[in-house]
Image 1 (cartoon, rainbow, N blue to C red):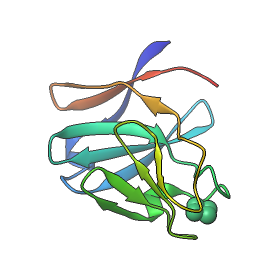
Image 2 (cartoon, rainbow, N blue to C red):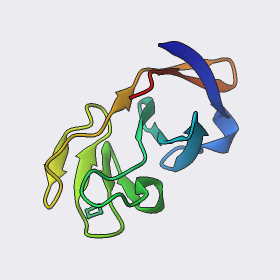
Image 3 (tube, rainbow, N blue to C red):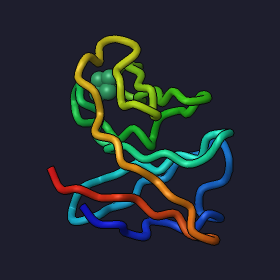
Image 4 (spheres, rainbow, N blue to C red):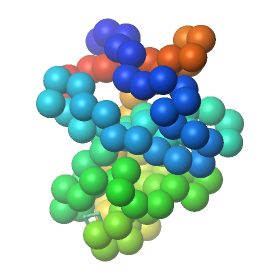
Length: 104
Ligand code: FES
């Protein structure tokens, strides 16, 4: 595991999300009302990019079939998704967003 800078805070306004790529892994960085979160950006149902969907509180909705995940835990919370997402610890350091990245 290693901490990696993935975005500037200003790049991810509150209520939005952004796709970043680390070592060819697509990761979604979310700016929720209580801070930043990060998960795999790849929906576990059929590999759609979650950052192209909608963020509602702590839930991201996949744009392809409407499945949903809790961005805090990666848990699938609405069908057709059942397999959880990989999550990453996040820290804000000054005006930068860092994640503790582990390759899967
Ligand atoms: S690809 Fe995400 S719900 Fe089907």
